[in-house]
Image (tube, rainbow, N blue to C red; front, side, top):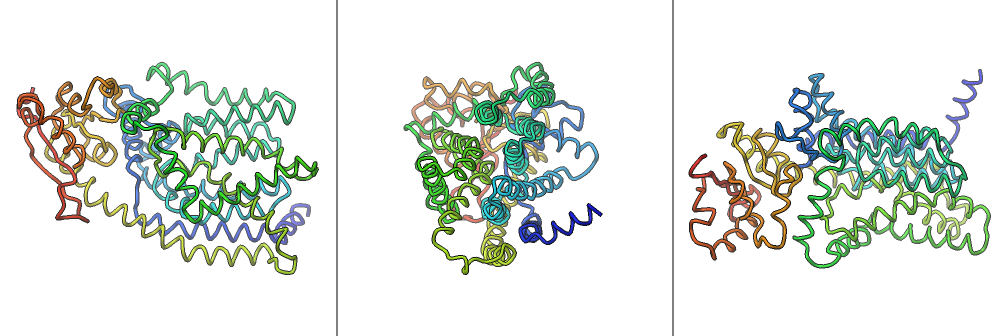
Amino acid sequence: MALRDRLREVWHDPYTVALLLLLTVALIARIPLLLTGATEEDVYITLRYAANIAQGVGFVYNPGEHVLGTTTPLYTLWLALLFRLHLNALLGGKLLGIACDLLTALGAYRLGRAVGRPGVGLGAAWAVALFPLNLTWAARGMEVGPVAAAIMGSFLGQILEKELVTWFCAALLLLLRVDGGVLALFLLGDSLLRLHRFPWKGLLLFCLIVLPWLVFATIYFGSFIPTSVPAKLIVYSREYARPLPQLKPFLSHMLMHPFEGCMSVGCILAILQAVWGFVHKETTLQSQNTNLLASLLWMLTYYAAMAFSPVFLFGWYFVPPSPLFYFWGMLGWFALGARLLPNRFRLSPLVATALASLLLATVTVPYAYRTLKRAQMAEQRLRLPIGVWLHTHAHPYQTLMLEPIGYIGYFSGLRVLDTVGLVSPQVLPFYAKRYPSPLHALWSHFLPDFVLLRAGEYQMLVRYERTLPFAERLEGHYRLIHVWHDPSHPMAVPAFYLFRRSNPL
């Protein structure tokens, strides 16, 4: 009887019914996006690791090379399990991402209820469900969906003072992304300063989950830090020599894009409201903002790292903090609305959610669908065929030097020399300033069987090598055997040039 009463109470809660409607819309919106087949380039790096694990080759990208080139070991193991069970690993990864999107939206709503602002939580869940950023990355196969869910779970558990839940999610986050370890420091600080206790049980659980991987990775790879972390810093620091090269693109994204700009203004309003509450000693505002302070500080730290880093701003970098970003943005806009809108103009949660979801979905879902179809068409017509051609015309033991190692590396099956160093840390010393052209230094030092260059890379290499004797140029040791044009620009110069060594060793 008690359970029946509880279910009746939940059903008659207008916020709960609105949330169920929203989650249903979010799921339906993602189905056509999944059917586009769009898959991000970097997913195939993780898939190659997963396939090698499942086949017993080892946790490696190139057989015999113990290099941690994937930044998401837990997600890699999930894909490996699907491979081992003879299931569609790529589809399984995407379905997990979509499920985690729904969990994140649910967590955003629960966070709002936990601080006495269910409308804010519902608004943040609505943004997670239907904003273009989250829709376009929901079906691309990256680990960002599980990462965002783990972040939301950690902060929600902290607000609800569920210590084991908090640190369980924090441990999953660290295994999904090594930079997630920073969040654990904010959680620990919040426990000590706000809750006035040391989370012994939670930290013990955290260590029990995380330590086996850290020990294994240190022994197997030599470090639990993925190679991609120093590789990107070294390579992009050389490519972007000016100070703070990503600050302007970051600010442009956060302020000029309609949805991100709207939420950025909301965050500013929320921070101003928080300052107002502390200055005027408004007890309710002080309590709410104190509870949420750790999430705000972590989010600002994450964004500061993106803005001030030399590393290129890949689109998926914006997804993990987005639920908290939306939550703080909604806090600001709801506070402003409460001051400006009379009660008679406010809609019920169910009606507001239904109308807002319908209006937004008619814009963002077609936009995301077109974006994904266009992106995947380029992959299907260019990089995937290159990988298939190499698989057909080269021997598996041969080495291919290139930068886009996702599609081409996976479908070619060749041993890869990665010019950025994500899976080939041996290339990183050649980005020192004493090497005028890293590409020239790499091919001339390693002498791979094949060299695949983008149009821009080829042009830069040719300009540098014009000053060298013929015997020191690429054309002195390699011959051009194939070019590929971008189907969307068939009359332009080739998009890729493939060279084969003239004198095989």
